[in-house]
Image (cartoon, rainbow, N blue to C red; front, side):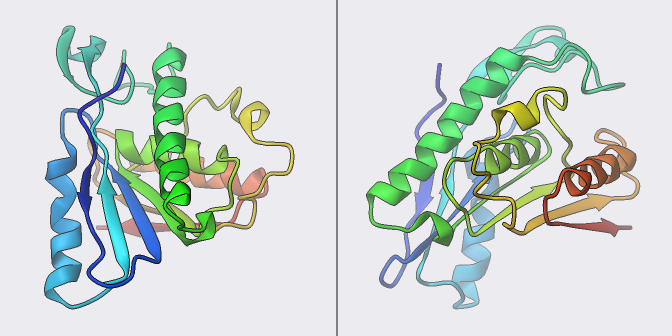
Length: 203
């Protein structure tokens, strides 16, 4: 199962780097194209291609089974680690890793690729970034949290190519859906396991 094709904002000059940004629950890649448009207006990162993937439309338990774009099912907003949709998470991990491989196949070194996202997409980006078999330039998660905490380290490649890859996490202190404490605990846990995490809180 896969979503619609990713939206791509191509580089204006010679393509030498790529940023992949994943949306949150119920959103789409189109909802984040403004990031690329902002940099284009400012004349920045003209050598960068921006990729905005689209999640498949699936039933979401917490929303009474309504079908909407989602990287995986969510059963509770009280504790996002309860009954995690491992099948959906791993399916979306494969999608993200395929996007990275597709950029490498175009001639972009993996260490010139940044992977990030917001909320559910941010959680996927953290998960996919640390489990990626290729060295990335950076990983970021905005209003995000840790997926499959009990199995994550078993899914990291033996050589752990992204152990030194910078990870940025940003979280609002009044987030009513993805609680700030979940983001802080995620950053703390990743640091405990040896990853390089910069966690910032915003009012």
